[in-house]
Image (cartoon, rainbow, N blue to C red; front, top):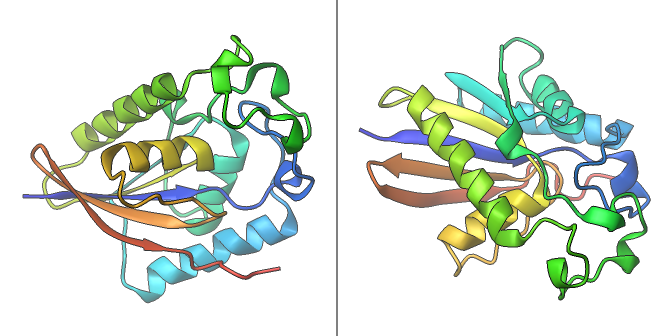
Length: 189
């Protein structure tokens, strides 16, 4: 029997709006980010998607997004392993300063991609253990770590997480299926 996990990126934040590097540094959701989360929640409800369990990163932008999606009607667990990648000295700086193609070589305090992916894998394994066969979970996290995780398992997808975009994964034993991607809030301004 299978277990389904919907991975969701948080809504737009103040730092997203101003194009600031936002790894472990947190900033609140903008009004648009709140609306994106509400629209994403509407998407799930309109499609009859119900969650047995809910998880998110320990960062406020993720938990706030989850609360808007679920209309604060569901308890959830915060997971440290779902936190965004640590960008070292670049945290809070303009995105243009980030050495995109050099990573932790340019800044040894920056978390290496493979370490972030390993953390996300641990989080997914934990979530799977909390689900009974046939159950469904939502897990709200962050664009970089969610994207690296999905591309690590499905390199052919080259999927990029927009704000409040969704990836549906179905786990059956050791097998995982990329069962769809959605962006209910795409184009919202």
